[in-house]
Length: 379
Length: 176
Image (cartoon, each protein chain N blue to C red):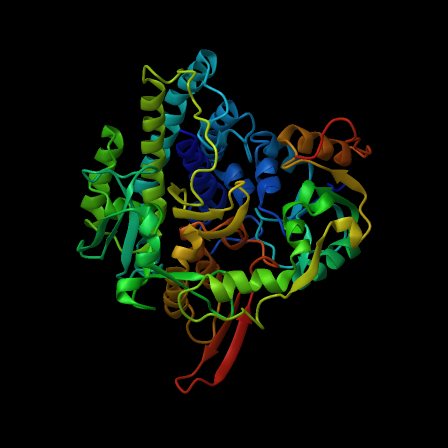
């Protein structure tokens, strides 16, 4: 439930705070107003829905873990304290409101999706592999699942993979121009083994989500876009469907008879020196691999994070968007903004996904067919 | 009277302090009515502006890029706030200080890779030998500890600063 609440708040942040300014006010609109405050001025209801959905997720985290950010509630062997009835009831009482806001936003997006046809066609639309966790039977899993990899025509490249064997399937490589490592699907090698994770990939690898309202939305999504949508622009749409799904699963979990069970933690000593954990973080598959000594002190760590899985795909998307929108001598701000917006589709961790530069300087070199530099533009 | 000019910047931290800032929820809109946000993660401004009244700094000073930015921030800011434990003590980024950047870079980019082991560079900012708190590099006017400081605390600090009061954080927040 903590993970699902985190997905709701993180998706709300990505969609409303970071991407809705482009979608609502326009990719070419005045950059001075192209932010959440600008959205709040133009459509206060949409901005309020965003704040409320993020708060819904954050409050669940606070009620379970004691604080909204970095709660120390999840501990080896379980969690540090059980849920009490009043907390459960408070969360349940907020669900109808959150559900209504999530559906309203999804309807707004669907009503407007036709106006972004050009972006959808050039924001990272290419075949790749997709990876995500699924339960036995094919429902999307956000924890306790097994890895599945499919290609863009649905061919299953790997299935039922125990996350402990991640190393057999995923390779890591270093590019000299980034501290972010790139991963690739080992059987296809580098760079052919390019794959995507996160909302778009999860909806592609799963047969269904497993809650009725979200599955109805998923069926409509597939009617509109095909069974395996390949444009990263559709991360937005997938994210909104996942918000609906996560709210409904939280509701289901809270309605289980054992949800208030006080037995929430097993205690044990170090009985193994190595372990791998995997979950679906908001942005995609997250792998933690640890080695500890006999006192439990960490000696070695490898983290394979969603933004790393998506690194090759993000770079290819930037190239595609830049090639399509940046042409000739007239390079307008809105064209360069689209090159940043395609990165925001992936919702990489905040430094890259935000508009602030110092944090993300953008420079585009325009070269002729021989590779000579014609012009350099930046924003 | 023109509104106070507020900036936020994120150096070597996890963005948790910025998340906590967003946890002000609807109060965020009240604050944005009272100040002009001139730089930060939620506005599309590429260069740090001149003449900023208040800058909230999240994160420690760990790379050459952090160093360049903090000098620029200090030069253009009247009240500089160290927001959160990484800015105030260097916290988690400072855990590497006993190991040194060379060993860390080797582990990440030479050992734990499948192909193309190499140290990133020269287009990425070099890591400094030590990750340091902000006040070890430039003068800091207000310290707000917490990992992260709560949204209520950030709101009250901003409310004080916007109204021209000196915020008192001693006794109302702690590390962690």
